[in-house]
Length: 194
Image 1 (cartoon, rainbow, N blue to C red):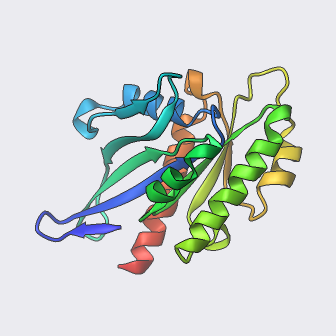
Image 2 (image 1 turned 90 degrees about the horizontal axis):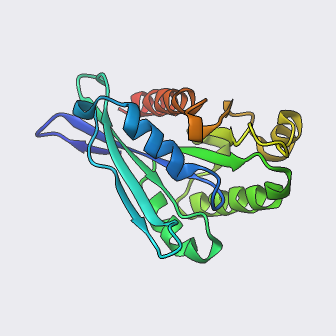
């Protein structure tokens, strides 16, 4: 959280975190395409030759007010590939809320678990833990024939019983439900700190 007292703005950072190719960038692209352009900034995407996000996507959304101040939500994604571990740490710096985008495919469970442990370790380095941090889980790719059951995904990934959402980010299903939930959790958390 960063407060710009001169402009009476609160800048809040939400990071979409998950394994490579789980749908993090797809979420942000869908959100950006559907919101009123007056409410958002530019969507910035950095890609490699392999056409995968290597650093972040960034988009500002303005909504309502928090204790008289205008909140601006900055949305980022992290690169999911293991070899971008240091980039993920940098992007998590100053985070106020997290959307963990899990890939529902059965054969991606190990990657989901490894990435969730990586997230917890990175948060601990900043003095936080998933146990008491604003975050939600999005089970993406629910439309695929090899999608794992929600019961098993919940048992293996949702150890702290946080809100979760089923999604098909490519079609926008569950994308805004996920975003609204994390915004609400972040706002509640910030109000206790102000």
